[in-house]
Length: 181
Picture (cartoon, helix red, strand yellow):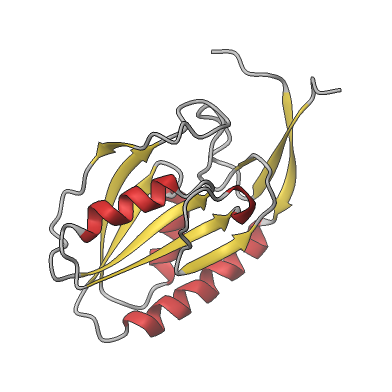
């Protein structure tokens, strides 16, 4: 597979991400304090780094599960067609659930996932997104917690990829294509 040549400019540092994850974990703890077990559902693949750091910061009993939904493929643009590629393994009926998303862009993926999970009858369902691009929203949805609001840039790092590359960066970077005039 060939991609256009690009460079990555740092947008959010690893240190800023770590501080924000710690603060978000405290807010989530305050919301779910007293729960017997919080089911933390990561949306694969982009949220895997965020969910790992987040659950390590939570001082709550947690169970981790994953759901894989896709609307991008290897493109920089959402297809707006959300496909569920992997459903949950565990039961969430009458349980407290936190959905962990890497980025809310058009809103189609999070909307479909919330609809799917609400149909499973959780006691409470809350959402968190590391990144939010409100300027791209096509569906009226906001995560209950957001790490960072970002401009309309294509980003990579901290679990987020471009054509399956750059997930391993410890920061969020914006992709700048070098073949653009």
